[in-house]
Image 1 (cartoon, rainbow, N blue to C red):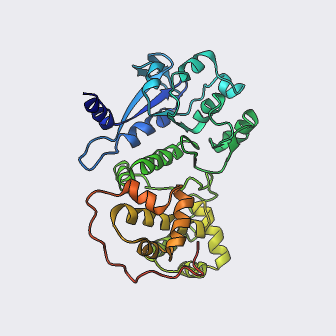
Image 2: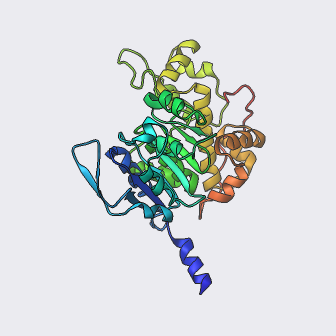
Length: 351
C-alpha cells in the first residue's frame, strides 16, 4: 500500500504556485501559466500543475483597470514544488524599506525548505526582503536595479542580464525576460525538445541566454543600416566548422570592427559568445536525442574535442555532457545520424 502511494505521488505533475500580490502586472502573472502550462510529456500529459494564490482568497487589484479573483490563500504555498513571485507596483515595505510586512511574512512562512523560488521583474524585491537572495546572484528590471542594490547590499545584483539561475533560486529581469526564464526552467527540468515545443506553441524564440543584455542599443536596426541577420543564418548552417570573425563580417560586407559593434548592438552579446551559445544548444539536442559518442557530439556541435565539449557544457549548464545525457536522454531517440564531415579541429575557432 505504501509503495502504491509513493508511485502515485511520483506521477503528480510538478506543482507551480504563483503568488499574486496587490498591484500585480497581469502580463507577468500570466507568464508561468502560459509557459509551464504548455509543457507536456511524449504522451501529452501535463508536466506541471499551475495554481495561483494570494495573501488571502478573493479579488486582487492589478495595475490595469480590472482585478482578478484568486481562489486560494497563502496556505497553498506549502504544497508548492516551485513558487513564482511576479512583478507588482505595490510592494509596500519590501520596496520602500527592504523588509516584509507582517502579512507577506506570514504568507512566505508557508513555503517548505527546498522549494524552488522564482521571481519575475520586481518580484525579486519580495525574495530579497525575505532573505532568500542574500549572497546570491540576482537581477530585476534594469530601471530598478540601482535602487534594488542600495536596498539589499547583501545581494549580488547583475543589472544587465535577462535572468539568473542559482539552482534553487532564480530571478528574471522585466516583462518578457520572465518568458525566457520560465522556458529556461522547462529546458532545465525536461530538456531542449520539450522547451522548444513550448516555445513553438507560444510563438516565442526558443532560447535567449540568461547572460544576454537587458537593454540592447538597437533592438530593431534602423532601416538604412545593414543588420547581421544573414551572418547568423550562415553560422547556423556551419556550427560544426571552425568559424572566424572575418568570415562572419564578410557575409555582411563589413569590416570586422563594424560587424562586431553592430552584432552586439543587435543581439546584446558578442559574436563569439553567441556562437558558443548556439553550439551548446546543438550539443544539448544531440545529447538528448542521439547516442552519438562524445567525440562525435563535439565534432557536430563545433567544439572539436570531447574535452572542449565538456568545458563548455559544464560552464553553460553546470553539469557534464554525460550527466546531462543521463538526465535528459529522450526515449525512443532515432538511430545515430551520420556525421557530416567528422570531428573538426577547434583551433582558431570562435569560442
